[in-house]
Length: 486
Image 1: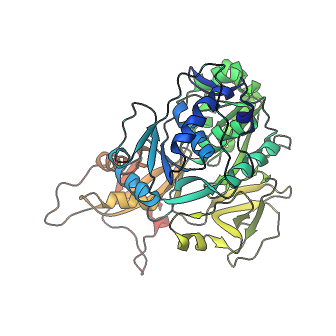
Image 2: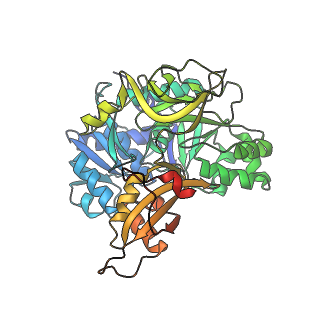
Image 3: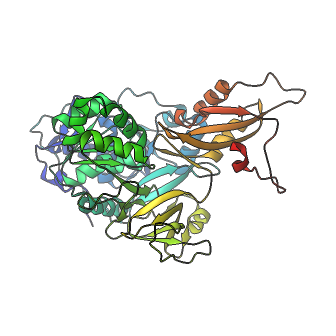
């Protein structure tokens, strides 16, 4: 058994979590999380209403202490997507902050409020419960595929501990580090790396609540030593740092700037380095694998790459026949496959999808990359064309197409991504309007964007909507997405 949070057992007065002006020491965190763990012990699974708040962090810690798998839920999720997640994961209870208004699918469940206010600095926590085995499910995180509804990725405790310990090595991460970020807490980057990571090291996390350039500058100028962000955030920092000396100085004081969830453009690497003298390092992971590779904090500059495999993680490139590619020539492209203790256990209720995801013991990532002579991997794109990386999110085109087709004014729909300086990629919809005798007035682009936002989540709405007379298709009726932009 690997204890997840050694610092919680020590119940020290050292700072653990801070959200705005609300904070908990390790002693206080234990004082609120241990009783909550006792209240939810024995539940089959709990849904976690994952707002960017102290309550979400405490709820996640309590579930992990109790050995109850938690299902983080995006608070801006659409009705149909939420209904699928609740039906698929079947949580027996929901955790939320007092006063949070929950959508109907969650409001129908038994509810436990996460109370975090009240423990004094010298509060005496109860003894921590005995933690479950390493293979016990810890989190079920839903990830968008290229077709169909999101799949529930079952992450065991082993994957979390091994990933965070590998990052300790790669990033020289210690209890002295103060991590600053403003990432959502319903996916791997924000919750596992951004909250559980500092707690496993015995350091502290300062969450901004909402990203802002001023917030980053303030926290890094104070005691922040590390910054986590997605390319959209770093792009805004890069643009501002060139004419904002205070921000440039704050970035220069950080020990580590880490970007993830999508590729950071080289122009933004160069702008931040020129303004602050600090390099941004990138890492590569997925919901199913957690972290696979990273540029090392103690290694050479490798801008534009996602670095080398983390300790204990095995990475290979394979060609179209599944044969391993030995070349490290910064030229030969192959699909990334991964094996190691960082991998998920299964897709919940989807043995077919789980089996299809593996080539023997190797997980098929679907990401294409090249490898240079130093062993650094450079991601060049998806094996499939239907995964869009926008604003730090990985978004499946298929679920957006399904949402569009649910609108009565849409006869056909295709969704693609196109480059966007701020978002990385923006979502583009290609729509054929209904023209039958019962069809009403054709919908506007704004109407369809709003429709998708209501059905799924605001960040999945199309930024551009093109109306066509017909979609290009091949002889088998498959939409030729490459022809759309042409």
